[in-house]
Image 1 (spheres, one colour):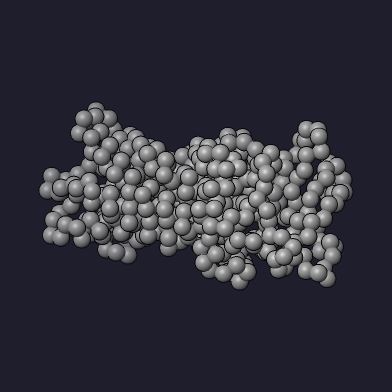
Image 2 (cartoon, rainbow, N blue to C red):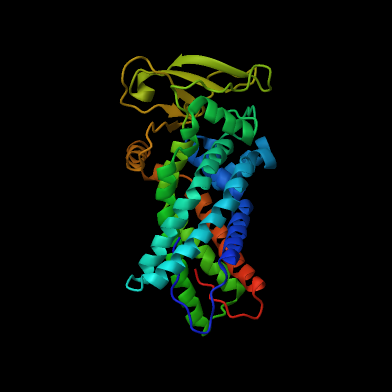
Amino acid sequence: MGGSGGGNNDTVRPPLYQCTLAGGFGGCTGDMLMHSLDTVKTRQQGAPNAIKYETLRRAYTTIFREEGFRRGLYGGVTPAFLGSLPGTMIFFATYEWSKRNMLQHWRWCPEGVVYLSAGFLGDLFASVVYVPSEVLKTRLQLQGRYNNPFFQSGYNYRNTFDAARTIVRTEGWNAMFYGYKATLMRDLPFSALQFAFWEQFQKWAKASCAGEDIGLGLEILTGGAAGGLAGTITTPLDVVKTRIQTQVRTDLPQEPLPSAGTKPRIQTHTINIPRQMTAIKHLHTYSSAIPPQSTLAKGVGSMQSHLRSISTGGPSTTPPIKNGAMVLETDSILTGLRLIFRHEGVVGLFRGVLPRGVWTSIQSGTMLVMYQTLLKTFNPGVAMELEM
């Protein structure tokens, strides 16, 4: 994360432990407050052809109606909390410590470079905690409730502990760090843009108010606008990260999906997709929750949103499909961006941009306002240098 510069002679920096606590609680509060929107974004990115998740409002109401609030919209909230609180505390501790030391000892270095360097170190150290929690969170968000009859993600974990145990057992410890590079490549530019925007917006607000105190309303507005703009711009990187962390590996045994004993019943049908539909002759498995009286003639749209590829022995020029989204089968950010752009266009790269923009806007506003408010509360009557 980046920041604003300098300090005044008549102000003092808050103690490091206070910055750590204030930043940690502020960031975690913002994450928890907006978790349901993050779930909607994950569904839109992980299942781009699912019509019921097409718009923000429709996705939100559909998930709530079918799966409920706790297990649907707030699925994956436990790993989100376990990663958010320590992750943001590690970030703010590393950021503040490295920034202060670089400003003191690297006087020749431009302040902007110092802030970006401190932000890089903060994100790097926090990623050790944050990335594993992101893997668990995104998979549980995409899956929804256990034995979910309304959406087949390819995963079927009972809870956070079961998800972690299953991933380690079937995919190895390294699977807990899937998308590590993609997460850093998303967070580093996001943080830099977020605080660059925030610094500029703060300057404009203080100039318009002719003073340092711009009031709570403008504090929320500047923080929210900075986060929303940064989140919107970095959406393609977030799409790639989500796809990498949630893609089902076809070379590993899959966890059982809802059995015939659950309601509604899960039926599996093997069908040949006509050449006109795929431009190649592939064999696919169509798996969805089908009421007893329904037929396969529900329309091509619903069929394509549940296709899963099966290897037929030869190499294919078309990526495998899961939930209507191609399985990238790569951890390269650039390769992932190229694949998504080639097969889904610009729309694919900006899948989930609305919930991400709203989420980052409110989350950033909450975090920055709480950060400054808590520091003022810790030090009543003291002129503190609160800039990031």
